[in-house]
Image 1: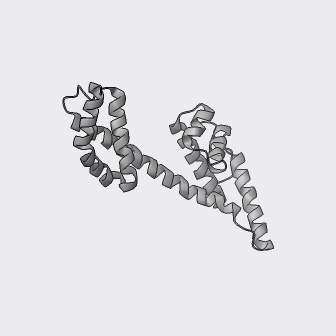
Image 2: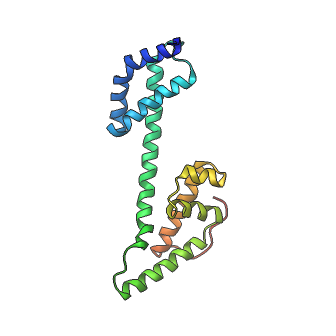
Length: 177
């Protein structure tokens, strides 16, 4: 066994349990193991496992950063899940002619609100809501950062929700995101 591998294995046996407890308290049982594995993977990729003066502190710093990232992802997912429920409500089963007429009007309002969005904003929103692509997939497809995609989706969601609820006047949004 090579020295870096042996050093990493010793670090794993020495700190994995404690690191797992730390991560579990921050992100829950389900994601804790992923955080621990990613922390050790990061340490392995840096190649510093055999040379660190304070490897425990380094591992905990990595894990703390990963738990913050995981919490942000969870918050973002929750925010967009609520929006998806509103927009996917259009796909509910048909009940009666009156509700079908109301749905048709709502769909027209929905389409009109989409038409008011800047093209990139609309495309990012539709790729996420209709096609179910992740923000990372959309970012790669459109050649933009994930953060920019987040802004486009949030802008589109807010605009469409306001228009569907009858708030705000009908006007095209500015092209800038």
